[in-house]
Image 1 (cartoon, rainbow, N blue to C red):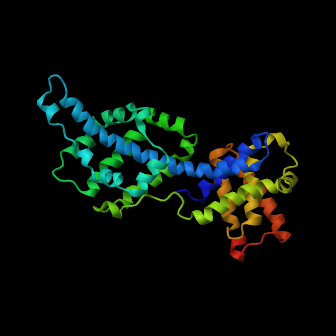
Image 2: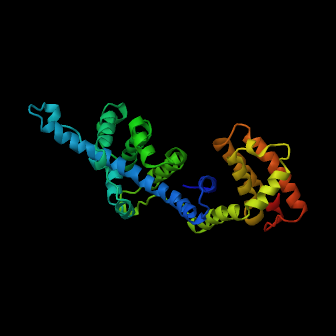
Image 3: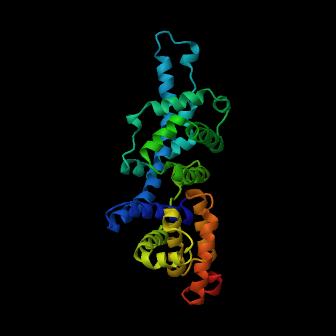
Amino acid sequence: MLNRRHLRVKVLQALYSYYQSEVKDFKPFEKALLGSVESVQELYIWLLSLLVEIADQSLLDAEERANKHLPTPEDLAVNIKLQENRFIVSLKQNPEYLAAIKKYKIAWDFDPEVSKSAFDALKNTEDYANYLHLDSHSIQSDKDIIKHIFKKIILKSPGIVQVFEEKFINWQVDKEVLQALIAKTFKSFSSENPADNQLASICPNWDEDRPFIINLFLKTILFEEEYQKMIAEKTKNWETDRIAMIDILLMRMAIAEILHFSTIPVKVTINEYIEISKEFSTPKSNSFINGILDKILFDLQNEGKVRKQDRGLRE
């Protein structure tokens, strides 16, 4: 699921695009910000659909082997248990999944070799052989082989990863979220009754998260000069062009949160942006950002500008 840190990264990306653009109309970038959240949902459905495609390949593979000019006894007795996998069967009947497939117009016919090559790789694994030789199948054993396909085939295949990287620019950034979503889906699909199984929610608190990212994006832009002045006063010994643009944006976002988001504790805000800087900026950015924000926070608190809902949120 997209937590607040992931959402802050989405805002950071939107702000970076905005400041790199010559057009300073924030509306298209606000729309793109919301679209970047929507794209996680779409990517999630694409991944689920690939699991279905790979399972369907077991039937196509069996038909292909049976239709050989001189099929062997083994060709005529290919095991297609994966086609009857309870997780896959339940997913195929899930109304939310079916609606999303239609909404995003998902179809793998643009590159049928993706699922075929994945299934060919799966056939040679010990886990798949063990699965086929099980005397009986439970929802758990069926989920276990699908987990194996996702973790060991999809995520480890350079060809599949390349397809997703080409279709989704934020694949590398969103991959961690997607793994959590798929894991939650495996956990929630625990009933033999398909109607009882539900897809994972991308943003369970979207009613709160949507205004959070929009307001954070807008406040960072609208108060740009004010925030930049605060930063400049604490970086007098630094040449402006020596400070990474990402660092400047992270500090502006942090100041916006401190001043305009009364329910978010100050410590949470600062820690979040320090952690984001470790992944998206220079090796020394985290300590630099921490030091500057501490000085700015000291001034803001002395001026009584940090208005949180209770004292604990200010500390």
